[in-house]
Length: 200
Image 1 (cartoon, rainbow, N blue to C red):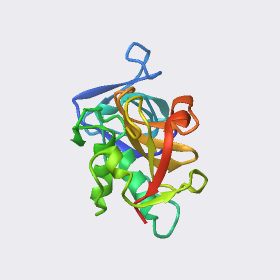
Image 2 (tube, rainbow, N blue to C red; image 1 turned 90 degrees about the horizontal axis):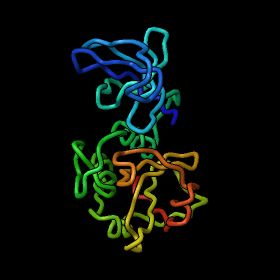
Image 3 (cartoon, helix red, strand yellow; image 1 turned 180 degrees about the horizontal axis):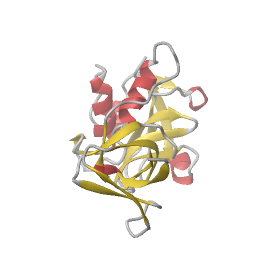
């Protein structure tokens, strides 16, 4: 996923930057406490970063996001975009069943945490959250809309936040952390139930 998240600061004594998103891959550079790398992407638990003219990967739990990338809109950022900007700061946060804080989220805990940061009150479970906001057709999705999916056992068992370009951010039990997936991926396209606009 290519997402510009701004600068990440090293919070450990030293952190290894790898050539690939794999702890066994070649060492590209070593960053020390306080060094900053510019994050240009995210890949299953690794940030893709630029540092001293090099591009490589650093485990996402070893960098602390220090500032948001500059938006070039020049004007006010939509409520939905603000939601998504905040949600992306938690990419890689572990999935924890029943979790609703940055130490760990389940799917609805993640969405409700992000929404509540902006003063939107939403129900706690995915199924009950489906009654919040107003219904939105899939063809009318806007950034920041909540997207809902069935699970094998429940008519509504999963929820995420639409981020544009057919993608949504969610705390995935299958992946084990907050990640970005495509609505057109086989599983999610089959299990898609609907969307609600809560932020406006």
